[in-house]
Every structure is written in structure tokens, then in C-alpha cells.
Length: 324
Image (cartoon, rainbow, N blue to C red; front, side, top):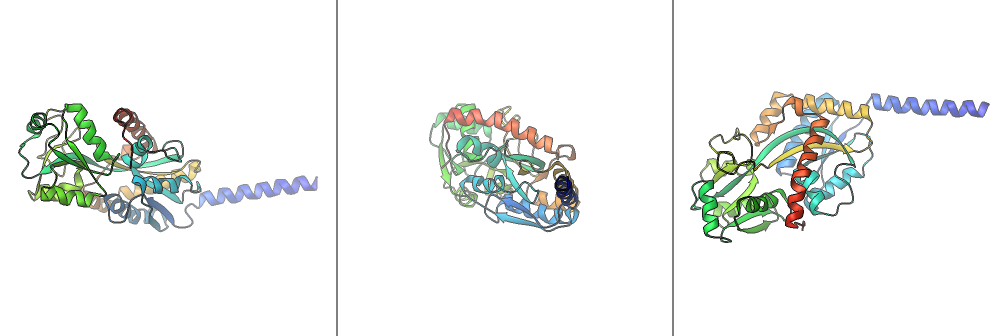
């Protein structure tokens, strides 16, 4: 009897400790794993967010860059982490959608994670060297059909969002052009500005400065509405290619089995950080726009991820795209 009472006391004590631990979350620094090198768009976004999250969480938020394999290494680091709310995965359409279709991953991008929140979004667009002969998207498509295989389009790696959008465009419009893979966005932009390649289907924020300066021209934004940062650039619908949309949306995830109360506390901290007007301004300065408050939810992130998987996976499979 005494032994039984002792075991019950121990169990009760452990339960009380676990409850207290969850109640005081976070009691130590939180880490956001960015699956790309420091200094890139995702890293910059994460550092702005981390600074703003520090106040509502009451703890430092640390950025850990774990790059490689198109973001798969960093995401895998979080998939293997303890489900305690202290290790978060920042990702986007490549890390949590495309990689699952182009790579053999040691984790499941849906089942091994819990969504926390949608963060921000920047569209892709079709940007070209300033001297390219086509003046608009209709002329570009006509030129490509008259000169099949002659145009060159830069893409970051093989099996990334820019690469897949370019292949999708060819299938959608019946055009053909050469894809030129780059190891990163910086050398791609450099060659595009120098006229070494003709065009790209890139993250709009990365090319905005050059478009504004006239060093590049943008034919259309791959979104349903015109982009606030370049309102003179038409949408694909307006340019004559309806329904062709692609963007770099960012979200936050934690490992599966993270306690519900920890998720609730973490989500509240993210939402409070996103409500800071200074954060919104800093995001806009780098071409990122916050999702509306109603979509800053785990459910909205899960729904978007599901929809994007259903959209891109068949395209990737049909084109037999495999990441390098």
C-alpha cells in the first residue's frame, strides 16, 4: 500500500512539474532555424521577426542558420528536435511543399510538424534584361513561339520555385526556352542585369531595386492582384495568362507532438509580434507583406500548405523534376 501511495505521489509530482513547465513557457531562449545562409531574404525576415517576438515571449529568440539541400537540412534539424516549443522551423513554399516532391526526405513535411502561423508573402514575377525585345508579356510569348529554345531563363538550382515556375510557364503557354541553373540568387541577378541571360521567374523583392532603376523590366506579377511595391506591373490575368500564380510565402512550424498549450502561447507571441507597426514597415522595406490577421493562424498555414502541395506536386511529377 505504501509503495502504491509512493508511486502515486511520484506520478502526481511529475504531472505537476510538467504542468508548471508548460505554464511558464518559454523559460529559456527560443531558436528559429532558418534553412538558408545568413543574409538572404528568409534570414532577414526571420531576424526582424525574432527581434519583435522577444518582447511578447519574454525570452531571447535566436536565429540558427542550417543551410543545404534546398532548405531540407535545416527543416530536418527541426523535425528531429524535441517537441517542446523551443526549436522552430521558418520555411516557405520550397521547404515545406516543393522539396517533398523533388527530394527523398527523411521526414514528412506535413505529418512531422505542427503549423504555428503564416507570416508574410512576396510574389514571383517575370523579370527580364532591359534590352530584351519584347515590350510586354504578350510579345514575350509571341517571341518565344517564333524563336523556340533561344531565350535563356535563370533559376536558383534545379527543383526550386523559380525553376518550377519557369517549367510551369512553358507548359501553360506552349513556349520553350533554356533553363540556366544558378547556385544562388545573387549571381543570377548579376548576370540578368549584365544581359548574360534573358529572364527569370524570381522572387519579386529580389529584383525590385533593379526594375525601379530601369536595369531590368518586369512583364507581369504572378498574383491575383497587382503588387503594392510595383503597382504599374500588370498581373498575369491582365497580361493574358489567367490563373497563373506563384509566390514565396513564409510560415513557422514546430515539431509534431508539441503540447497544445505551448502552441497557443507561441502563436500568441508571433501574432503580437506581427501586430507591431514597426515590424510591418521593416517587412515592407524588404518587399514582404504581412498576411491579414485572420490568416495568421495554424489552420490557415495548414490549409495553404495543403493547397500548394496539391497544386505543385502533379506539375513536378509530370515534368519529372528532381533536385540536385
